Image 1 (cartoon, rainbow, N blue to C red):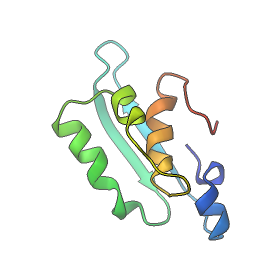
Image 2 (image 1 turned 60 degrees about the vertical axis):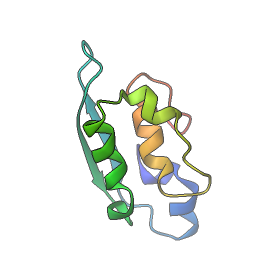
Image 3 (image 1 turned 45 degrees about the vertical axis):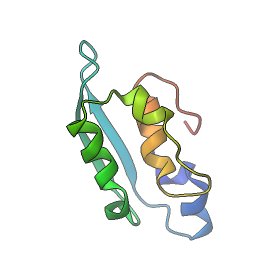
Image 4 (image 1 turned 90 degrees about the horizontal axis):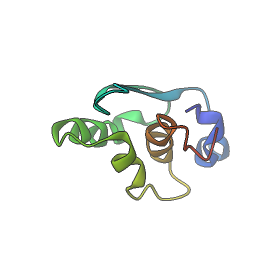
Length: 88
């Protein structure tokens, strides 16, 4: 999910970066999350918690990611695993 699709990143003029989720299609396990961009350290713990709790990308994508926030990028990236992202 590119930060260019995230309103708050655009408003702040810092839309360089992305969030990418790597998941196993067969098991629906989250294998990893790559985050490059503004303030990603503020929400990397959500990805770590998702892995610890064995959440699926769909489950994480269905949790609340307020608008406008940068954390929307993580929620949208999780939904993108199944082609359900709004911002793509």
